[in-house]
Image (tube, rainbow, N blue to C red; front, side, top):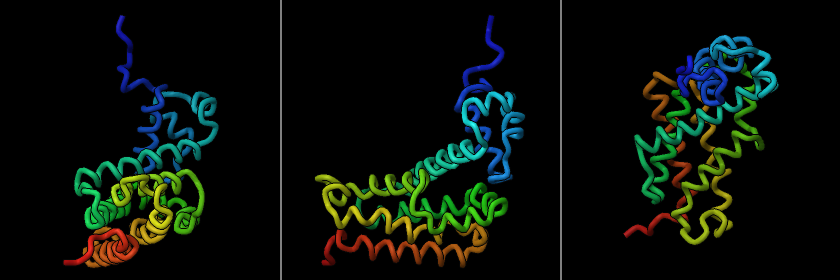
Length: 203
């Protein structure tokens, strides 16, 4: 007898649950409830509670997945070649991708205080995820150890996150070409300054 659900549509699979939360958050941001998730998944609140306890825990899982996808999307559109110029172009694309993502605007609408706090958050899983991903991108600038082998380079991921957030967390700019270009150019200029010690000397 064949299963009623294919693997990808099993309402109890983690992948299906997180995909559902991601889809719901693109419209309702952090207002997505366990009831709405259960309805969207075709499962129950009791099942979700037994596995994740709160809607907030599922929101976080979904946001981490969206963040990872933003880096993948940027890699396809503007892959880094490991140089300062390539890393700058790639991270500018990441910033643009996050800013234009519907979930960014939805979270800003649904939870303005939480969204504002994200500008200065110093800890947390999302912050750590971004810092680690930036560190990985910087590795070619110091092949023998990356950010772990060069203390000065090791300070850069956090500084890059700090300058990226004003440009990435600005969904109000989406659709305004001039404003978006200003944000992207300002971020790129600051990033080039941060990475200047690892840029090739001008000929």
